[in-house]
Length: 203
Image: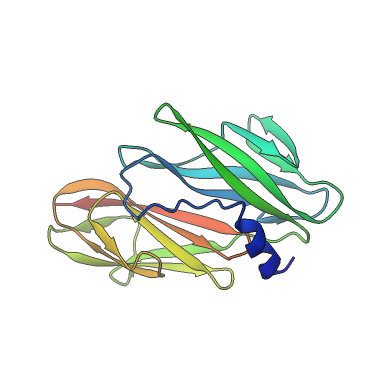
């Protein structure tokens, strides 16, 4: 499956949210299939990264999935099983956030099995970190180290103001005290996706 064909499919089936980087409203941020591509007859798990109106970010399972592939809901989550032929299958996904049902679509490549990219580390000012702690008025440099080919990056935050939020390295300016979340989503351009969350505190 070529990148050109996949890009054409994404014109009709895109799993990204086009809103700015501020986490201040309910949204489905990304949808992930694991593995990223499945072989004919293969099975993939579907997970969702979402945010709510309070700025919380969470990984969850869909409320429902419909589409061209066989769908199975078990105690372990939602799974789809591909048919016998290569294709780009479109999945329609719904998730309730703050009492409102949100839709999203996911284009899943049925071809040779392929893995998702991976966020190996997240860094704050050049050092690996599991949280951000900053003073009011600081400008922190956020870096995501991703593996898995040529990647695109999308940063989101519920605290401070992000710039360069579509690059591997973003800047967060912290103007007032508070606690929140930072998240980075990486994509490989052919359906693979990964994400990492970073708790943040400004004091």
